Image (cartoon, rainbow, N blue to C red; front, side, top):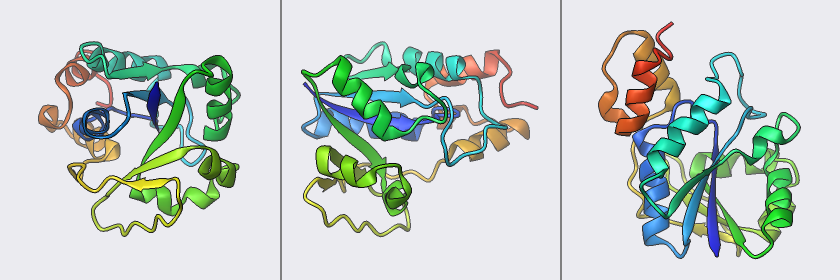
Length: 190
């Protein structure tokens, strides 16, 4: 099975994340998309990070009704911070029958050269890149596939967190189950 891996903190998951994953699962040659929840991103501060199990549960609730979407906690048992190459190696060891591809935004591609063993990732895995507003995509490698038709939305998790803290209604920017969970648990309000 050809599986797209959508790595991220998803702090919190928003409608943009779900749209990208759903689009890739329906309109590319990927048979399934797995959200890989990162307990700690090596490039981000942990201070505002919601507990990893809550982030996992939110995505699990959103993916449960779609057979082409899933969520993985594989990085929860790995050394922190987790690096994509290590996760890819572990997945290949545990599920050698699958072919894995990365899904990333053009903004991540700009900084891809800073990732641990990025050359190996680029040689061994396909990378599906979706556009981000205002960012030019320079993907001139045989394993980089530009997916131009992915709907673009200027939504960020930090914007959602800050808006919730300010008492704004951002329910329309989040998938329904994700918003309900966050609102009921009073997350990001302080």
